[in-house]
Length: 151
Image 1 (cartoon, rainbow, N blue to C red):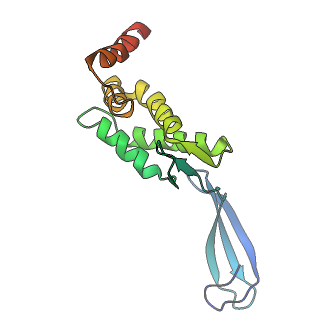
Image 2 (image 1 turned 90 degrees about the vertical axis):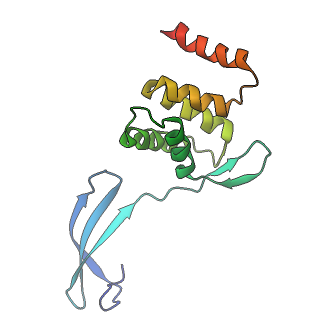
Image 3 (image 1 turned 135 degrees about the vertical axis):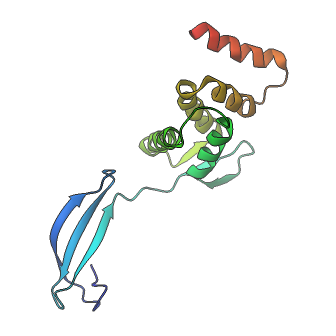
């Protein structure tokens, strides 16, 4: 690790601690040349994920797009931003854990609906109406009836 003060290549680790979220390790280091201390963070490198859209075009995975869609579905609903961010974290982790480097928008949409349903049924129906592109009132009512049957 290069020292930010003198650019010397060698340092020693003085202290290591897990970050609050547990996703990284904070390390205090001391330069072996100038003896100044600095902090580094070590995280797991995640592989890039490509999203395959309905038209078979591809683009980089962007968690903000998922979050924005969920926020729109939960507009004027009693769902906290923390709950939505936690749901997006779960979705992203699920995709990373699948070890697939390409994921379809269909799979992402299903994961979003799985997370929205327990949070807020109205938000779930809002998201489903856009995601599933209901053609008429009957397909919309079919989805509502499925929710009512589960209760």
